[in-house]
Length: 535
Image (cartoon, helix red, strand yellow):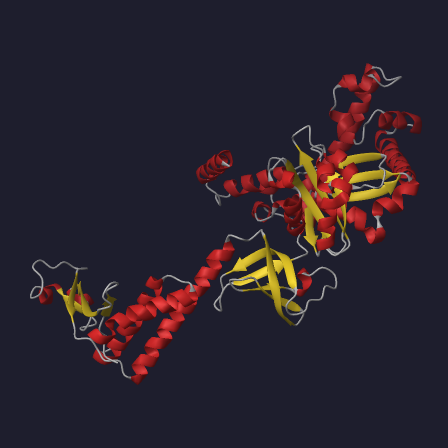
């Protein structure tokens, strides 16, 4: 067809109709038409030409222009779309490199093939606009609950119509053995929205802990208004869950508000989650207290927290052990997820045996290394001494408080401890040197001879080797594999080296080797401090 006055207005009417039908901006459709007409014009005038088309938004008139860019003489490659400064002087007064010259060319007639091509361009643009609209609508709804209708099921995944598009509820995001039929209503949590080639992919979940949080926010006005805060959620989807809540308003009982009158509020959430049993737990800033709450309904006798290792030991009466652990370890597993700590549960009898074993082991250490009798060694252990370093380097006054220890005895104890440690150090250094450890690593500040020996046994023999280590390789740590916390043993973990100390030593080694610029490091640290302050 030819772009004539008869069909100029029809272009705008078509754009309006398409935009209204697809609920997108009419301007996008007009831009698609301009692009399709420009493509058709290029096929008519030559693909090397730079043809632009502009459609008047009021009259629908399409203007075809040929654009040429002014370039340097040596850069002239495309004679149809470029020209030199000298050539441009016949069209422009004072041409400069980078200037453009536009001249109108006659409109083209769209043949059958060109018209089909134009239609494809418009349809493609419309599809892209629809996808962008859908993505922009849902990207801000990540972390919220949506309602939808089940359309179909594909390989266990449920395709849900959520109004502006389709979402996917994957098999592993369904609760238990939930089954859906086309037309069923489903409520789910928007877990992720990704922009992909075939259009936005919206992923739903009914097993995410956040789904429970959002359900409580819908059922409990105090949570929605911020009077009550949800601090942590742990779920075994379809079976059991724990949710920790706190209120900073002394007049509000957070647990009672979440339970509701005769359990009405929590029951509404339970019904939505297919009968999942929910323990509502008061949150507490004190970690041991919070853990005691988290292990409900079991009673706890004692809690021992190791914050550095992220580990906690819980002692319970014998009759409470099975209740604390729960069926298939469910109760302790959920409590561990809720507190983000590795929980070791033992009975009072087991703890007593372990403490007795530790006492005997330390007593034996002092008997063998300090040449003491068993009774005197037991006195040291009873006063809290656990290793030779403590005996060798504590203030003399701390030894004098032990019954029967005078100043001479205390000095003799320290001398024996220091002699033994020095002999250990000499042996460790000799062993390390025999394995080929370089002096640069032996003399590195912060590493004891025993540490150097342990590093050598692990293949770390030079300062360069040490500088390439990761902090967790030295200090150890915990990783989560398939939902279970797994221990990573560190080379220097037996010497109580923390992650922060390991980071500092590794960075110091890198600075000594010239791998890291201290000035850049300080600048990065200052920037991090500013960002933290802003947050």
